Image 1 (tube, rainbow, N blue to C red):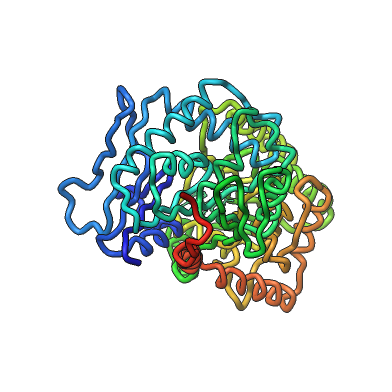
Image 2 (image 1 turned 60 degrees about the horizontal axis):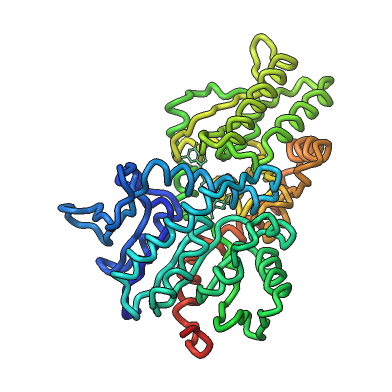
Length: 461
Ligand code: GDG
């Protein structure tokens, strides 16, 4: 690649964050000294800043430059908590009932994207490649094109692509297909996401589907493809084999454990998971086997009302469940509303007889892949996975469940805990094959190679 790689994501890695699959994969892609990572500044400004801020001033040895766009507190509320997380997030996760359409949200979203476009346009050169991440920046390419930027621009959407019907919740004046077709390449998590994106274009009289996976819309053409994201497999396997957990707990981890790990988000299906576990406990009364569910659910976006709501709902369910089933020397549900250390997490996955991943909608779900990667191949646990998670598309050997069906999830818990070793091994191996195939380093290399190799014949201007 002759030019530089410019990455744009809402967050960028901080000094404290030295690991994490996506960060590692993208850092690897940002060739030595030849890349820029642009993200939001951690502090709010009095007034929105018109300049990108150099985050690494005076720091030695950075392999790439980090530049920050600074938001005002009001913009954080309207662009980030507002349009991104109270309109686009619920819309893409099939929760139209939670969409909160405020005119200020849309204005701030467009304004932040426009300002960022001006800042990027100042530094982008024609031979650079620009890779934009996620729903915070749907209109960014359109705004860059309007400023005359001709560099190749790719986009990856980490969350589900919305169904045509759900897009109706967007304000009429938004030209969503126009936003997307300003990119050269739109990467989505799954083939089902690509199908939904094509469905949207198919409904447009001005769109023309071409044979090579591209769509022509007005004077532009965009390539659509799925790039299922994954984890940093080897690092995770290694972390899972460590003994930090033993140092923390000693041998005090009695009985069989089920594990769930999710940001506390209404899309993750946590209430039904708790209910299904409760149902399982009711049914197995007669056996004396003690099974605990360890649920780790660190808080996110707590300023958004729907997130406060789900937190209260879970606290109530957890209290009721333990009240009904706990005994003097046993607590069936351990619910931790905090983030825990990554190595400990990997070792807890390995210790758990089953991993519960039951979202109603999820772009991919990396926890599913982490749970598999963490298992002991000689004695693996079982992944219980929602059909609605992107991860289910290529992990058919997990125990797939319908996240709305509490009985089915409770039945899957029973099946997982009683599954004979040869079946557990067979399922583990099949899932692990997918986990390796989608390693995050491969994922980013694949996306960038596809963007790089797009021929210019039908690109814009
Ligand atoms: C979005 C899409 C898509 C969670 N709790 C702790 C902790 N985590 C880590 C997990 C995992 C990550 O956070 C969560 O990733 P997911 O993929 O499960 O979900 P989202 O955060 O919603 O991510 C999703 C993803 O983007 C990537 O494209 O797969 O569909 O929604 O890595 O391990 N990590 C630590 N402590 C915790 O308590 N250390």
